[in-house]
Length: 393
Image (cartoon, rainbow, N blue to C red; front, side, top):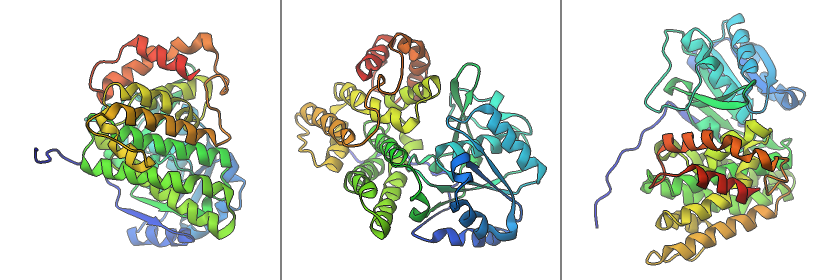
């Protein structure tokens, strides 16, 4: 037996506020920090919803502007529009309201403010030891998520170059939201398919954190708890109504938090790398990509690191023998595939509208991300990436 050894790095996230009705506290958070000119960034659907009034109402006179143009996969043009609006009102705070798209749009726009330029043109494969150069003013980000993709817990923002449809990212500690406000009442208008798909994205976070070569005791514990919460509460959250649904959704929000809290320490693996390119290439929501790729990548990883499936098995309630771990790891993959099948989401790339003859077009970009993240015990080759895409088809 060896004593645990390693390190755990924290972000600039300062507070997570959670519970029904907590949106009412948002204005007090800005007041406490002396912030006066907040921009709310959201998408078209929530931009038409009365829920937006609960966010702007909580801000009161501190709401300087509302931007409603955030879009799936974060097109570079929307980032530029938001950055221009933030500059126009001289914003000192920005509130992302919605799912991963508004959250990432805000992060990359904030990167533009920090750099004094256009961060979309500087986005590239994530370099975790890097940062954004420039002397621009810091803009405080508050995240009010309505899905479970959990991007609000990271300092990474993704942005898609429209002509190439390739998604890259920016990373800097200053892009981390200072506060995440989880109010499950604000999720009740989220479409069931989107809520479920992003819930499976959180599931994917937990799974890939567990079998990452960088896993550690804390991330294992969080992964197991996240999986257990999602198994118990995600189906019930869309099958119940009223206060009961709100309670289940609140538990799902906790699962999303736990699923990714250690993710910047473990980093994520092949399923995420596939999703990052499947999404913008064929306009497939990232949560849906996890529904499609996760079981196949789990089987792949069961052949490489089966012993690290122990937290996944714990969360799923699967019997796991550390002396012979591969059968348990494969049972975890089968159990996850069965869990996903109960939901009305695409279960294959074919169902998602992907053209088979185009699969290999993203293999090199996916492989580049896998090589860069260094979370798999051995080198992964292009043929294996193509084989996983074929299996997912």
